[in-house]
Length: 210
Ligand SMILES: *[C@@H]1O[C@H](CO)[C@@H](O)[C@H](O)[C@H]1NC(C)=O
Image: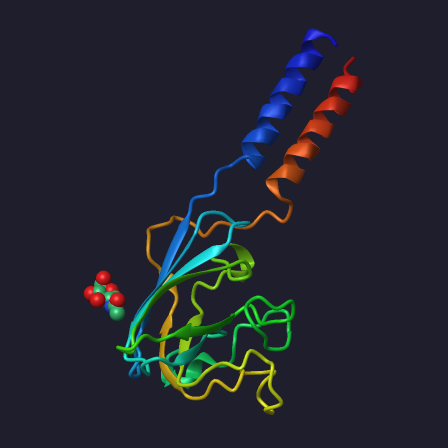
Protein backbone atom coordinates (compact mmCIF):
# COMPACT_ATOMS: atom_id res chain seq x y z
CA UNK A 1 0.00 0.00 0.00
CA UNK A 2 1.34 3.46 -0.84
CA UNK A 3 1.49 6.35 1.57
CA UNK A 4 -1.67 7.99 0.21
CA UNK A 5 -3.63 4.77 0.42
CA UNK A 6 -2.55 4.13 3.98
CA UNK A 7 -3.49 7.58 5.22
CA UNK A 8 -6.83 7.40 3.39
CA UNK A 9 -7.67 4.09 5.06
CA UNK A 10 -6.66 5.41 8.47
CA UNK A 11 -8.78 8.56 8.04
CA UNK A 12 -11.86 6.65 6.89
CA UNK A 13 -11.34 4.13 9.67
CA UNK A 14 -11.19 6.77 12.38
CA UNK A 15 -14.24 8.49 10.92
CA UNK A 16 -16.29 5.30 11.00
CA UNK A 17 -15.18 4.38 14.50
CA UNK A 18 -16.02 7.90 15.73
CA UNK A 19 -19.51 7.69 14.20
CA UNK A 20 -20.27 4.14 15.32
CA UNK A 21 -18.60 4.07 18.70
CA UNK A 22 -20.41 7.16 19.91
CA UNK A 23 -21.18 6.63 23.58
CA UNK A 24 -24.86 6.78 24.46
CA UNK A 25 -25.67 8.70 27.61
CA UNK A 26 -28.05 7.05 30.07
CA UNK A 27 -31.57 8.47 30.16
CA UNK A 28 -33.57 9.02 33.32
CA UNK A 29 -37.29 9.65 33.28
CA UNK A 30 -39.98 9.87 35.94
CA UNK A 31 -43.74 9.52 36.17
CA UNK A 32 -45.36 11.06 39.23
CA UNK A 33 -48.38 8.90 40.02
CA UNK A 34 -51.56 10.56 41.25
CA UNK A 35 -55.15 11.34 40.17
CA UNK A 36 -56.37 8.52 42.37
CA UNK A 37 -55.66 6.78 45.64
CA UNK A 38 -52.38 5.32 44.41
CA UNK A 39 -49.64 7.92 44.76
CA UNK A 40 -45.90 7.98 44.30
CA UNK A 41 -43.09 7.91 41.80
CA UNK A 42 -42.01 5.62 39.01
CA UNK A 43 -38.43 6.30 37.93
CA UNK A 44 -37.13 4.80 34.71
CA UNK A 45 -33.44 4.60 33.85
CA UNK A 46 -31.69 3.01 30.90
CA UNK A 47 -27.98 3.12 30.14
CA UNK A 48 -28.10 2.43 26.40
CA UNK A 49 -30.44 1.48 23.61
CA UNK A 50 -29.81 -2.26 23.81
CA UNK A 51 -29.84 -2.42 27.60
CA UNK A 52 -32.92 -3.20 29.72
CA UNK A 53 -34.89 -0.36 31.24
CA UNK A 54 -34.86 -0.31 35.05
CA UNK A 55 -38.15 0.81 36.55
CA UNK A 56 -38.08 1.84 40.20
CA UNK A 57 -41.54 1.90 41.73
CA UNK A 58 -42.39 3.67 44.97
CA UNK A 59 -46.13 3.81 45.63
CA UNK A 60 -48.50 4.22 48.56
CA UNK A 61 -52.29 3.95 48.73
CA UNK A 62 -52.54 0.45 47.28
CA UNK A 63 -54.75 -2.30 48.66
CA UNK A 64 -52.75 -4.09 51.39
CA UNK A 65 -51.31 -7.47 50.42
CA UNK A 66 -52.84 -7.32 46.97
CA UNK A 67 -51.49 -7.43 43.44
CA UNK A 68 -52.19 -4.51 41.14
CA UNK A 69 -51.93 -4.45 37.37
CA UNK A 70 -49.16 -2.07 36.30
CA UNK A 71 -48.80 -0.92 32.71
CA UNK A 72 -47.42 1.69 30.37
CA UNK A 73 -50.36 3.13 28.43
CA UNK A 74 -50.41 4.60 24.95
CA UNK A 75 -50.98 8.24 25.84
CA UNK A 76 -49.54 10.70 28.28
CA UNK A 77 -52.90 12.47 28.29
CA UNK A 78 -54.42 13.01 31.74
CA UNK A 79 -56.96 15.62 30.63
CA UNK A 80 -59.86 13.31 31.46
CA UNK A 81 -58.13 11.55 34.33
CA UNK A 82 -56.42 8.17 33.98
CA UNK A 83 -58.94 7.05 31.33
CA UNK A 84 -57.40 9.49 28.81
CA UNK A 85 -54.20 7.44 28.74
CA UNK A 86 -56.13 4.99 26.49
CA UNK A 87 -55.03 1.35 26.22
CA UNK A 88 -51.69 -0.34 26.89
CA UNK A 89 -48.78 0.89 24.76
CA UNK A 90 -48.84 -1.72 21.98
CA UNK A 91 -46.90 -0.64 18.86
CA UNK A 92 -46.74 -4.20 17.50
CA UNK A 93 -50.51 -4.83 17.76
CA UNK A 94 -49.98 -7.91 19.93
CA UNK A 95 -52.30 -9.57 22.43
CA UNK A 96 -51.98 -8.78 26.12
CA UNK A 97 -49.62 -11.01 28.07
CA UNK A 98 -47.21 -11.41 30.95
CA UNK A 99 -43.97 -9.38 30.98
CA UNK A 100 -41.98 -12.58 30.36
CA UNK A 101 -44.29 -13.86 27.58
CA UNK A 102 -43.33 -13.89 23.90
CA UNK A 103 -46.67 -12.31 22.97
CA UNK A 104 -47.32 -9.15 24.97
CA UNK A 105 -47.82 -5.44 24.68
CA UNK A 106 -44.66 -3.38 25.13
CA UNK A 107 -46.49 -1.73 28.04
CA UNK A 108 -47.32 -5.02 29.76
CA UNK A 109 -45.42 -4.90 33.03
CA UNK A 110 -47.65 -7.39 34.85
CA UNK A 111 -48.42 -6.84 38.51
CA UNK A 112 -46.88 -5.09 41.45
CA UNK A 113 -47.36 -6.51 44.95
CA UNK A 114 -48.55 -4.25 47.75
CA UNK A 115 -47.23 -4.91 51.27
CA UNK A 116 -49.32 -4.94 54.46
CA UNK A 117 -49.27 -1.13 54.49
CA UNK A 118 -50.55 -0.84 50.94
CA UNK A 119 -47.11 0.21 49.71
CA UNK A 120 -44.87 -1.05 46.99
CA UNK A 121 -41.17 -0.30 46.74
CA UNK A 122 -39.52 -2.38 44.08
CA UNK A 123 -37.42 -2.31 40.92
CA UNK A 124 -38.28 -4.20 37.78
CA UNK A 125 -36.18 -4.55 34.64
CA UNK A 126 -37.72 -4.87 31.23
CA UNK A 127 -36.15 -5.47 27.83
CA UNK A 128 -39.04 -4.24 25.67
CA UNK A 129 -39.68 -0.94 27.41
CA UNK A 130 -37.20 1.63 26.12
CA UNK A 131 -36.47 5.28 26.72
CA UNK A 132 -34.39 5.41 23.53
CA UNK A 133 -35.34 5.78 19.89
CA UNK A 134 -38.63 5.90 18.07
CA UNK A 135 -40.27 3.61 20.62
CA UNK A 136 -39.27 5.67 23.60
CA UNK A 137 -41.97 5.58 26.25
CA UNK A 138 -41.17 9.17 27.22
CA UNK A 139 -44.45 11.07 26.93
CA UNK A 140 -46.62 8.01 27.47
CA UNK A 141 -48.68 7.10 30.53
CA UNK A 142 -48.19 4.81 33.53
CA UNK A 143 -51.32 3.33 35.09
CA UNK A 144 -51.86 1.44 38.34
CA UNK A 145 -55.01 -0.69 38.35
CA UNK A 146 -57.35 -1.62 41.20
CA UNK A 147 -57.19 -5.34 40.52
CA UNK A 148 -54.76 -8.02 39.51
CA UNK A 149 -53.72 -8.42 35.88
CA UNK A 150 -54.56 -11.98 34.79
CA UNK A 151 -51.64 -11.79 32.31
CA UNK A 152 -53.84 -12.92 29.40
CA UNK A 153 -54.28 -16.37 30.94
CA UNK A 154 -57.98 -16.54 31.84
CA UNK A 155 -61.11 -16.92 29.72
CA UNK A 156 -62.43 -13.52 30.79
CA UNK A 157 -63.41 -11.57 27.63
CA UNK A 158 -60.91 -8.79 28.50
CA UNK A 159 -58.05 -11.13 29.32
CA UNK A 160 -56.25 -10.66 26.01
CA UNK A 161 -56.67 -6.87 25.92
CA UNK A 162 -56.47 -5.50 29.46
CA UNK A 163 -55.80 -8.54 31.63
CA UNK A 164 -59.08 -7.61 33.36
CA UNK A 165 -57.11 -5.52 35.85
CA UNK A 166 -60.07 -3.29 36.67
CA UNK A 167 -60.35 0.42 37.40
CA UNK A 168 -57.47 2.85 37.24
CA UNK A 169 -56.47 3.99 40.73
CA UNK A 170 -53.47 6.12 39.80
CA UNK A 171 -51.59 7.33 36.77
CA UNK A 172 -48.89 9.66 35.55
CA UNK A 173 -46.94 10.78 32.50
CA UNK A 174 -43.38 9.67 31.83
CA UNK A 175 -41.24 12.80 31.63
CA UNK A 176 -37.54 13.55 31.24
CA UNK A 177 -35.90 13.64 34.67
CA UNK A 178 -32.32 14.50 33.80
CA UNK A 179 -31.30 17.16 31.33
CA UNK A 180 -30.51 15.84 27.88
CA UNK A 181 -30.04 18.07 24.85
CA UNK A 182 -31.49 15.56 22.41
CA UNK A 183 -33.29 12.26 22.71
CA UNK A 184 -30.82 9.67 21.37
CA UNK A 185 -31.80 7.47 18.47
CA UNK A 186 -31.33 3.71 18.53
CA UNK A 187 -28.91 2.22 16.01
CA UNK A 188 -30.68 -0.74 14.47
CA UNK A 189 -27.39 -2.63 14.10
CA UNK A 190 -25.71 -3.49 17.37
CA UNK A 191 -22.28 -1.99 17.94
CA UNK A 192 -20.75 -5.46 17.47
CA UNK A 193 -22.26 -5.75 14.00
CA UNK A 194 -21.17 -2.19 13.31
CA UNK A 195 -17.59 -2.89 14.36
CA UNK A 196 -17.55 -6.02 12.21
CA UNK A 197 -18.73 -4.01 9.19
CA UNK A 198 -16.04 -1.40 9.84
CA UNK A 199 -13.38 -4.12 9.93
CA UNK A 200 -14.58 -5.58 6.63
CA UNK A 201 -14.67 -2.10 5.05
CA UNK A 202 -11.10 -1.45 6.23
CA UNK A 203 -9.82 -4.75 4.84
CA UNK A 204 -11.48 -4.05 1.47
CA UNK A 205 -10.02 -0.55 1.39
CA UNK A 206 -6.58 -1.87 2.28
CA UNK A 207 -6.79 -4.38 -0.61
CA UNK A 208 -7.95 -1.61 -2.97
CA UNK A 209 -4.87 0.49 -2.26
CA UNK A 210 -2.40 -2.36 -2.13
C1 LIG B 1 -41.90 10.77 45.41
O1 LIG B 1 -40.81 11.66 45.29
C2 LIG B 1 -40.91 12.80 46.14
C3 LIG B 1 -39.75 13.71 45.79
O2 LIG B 1 -38.54 13.04 45.85
C4 LIG B 1 -40.90 12.37 47.59
O3 LIG B 1 -41.05 13.50 48.43
C5 LIG B 1 -42.05 11.41 47.82
O4 LIG B 1 -42.00 10.91 49.14
C6 LIG B 1 -41.99 10.25 46.84
N1 LIG B 1 -43.16 9.41 47.04
C7 LIG B 1 -43.06 8.09 47.26
C8 LIG B 1 -44.33 7.38 47.52
O5 LIG B 1 -42.00 7.49 47.24
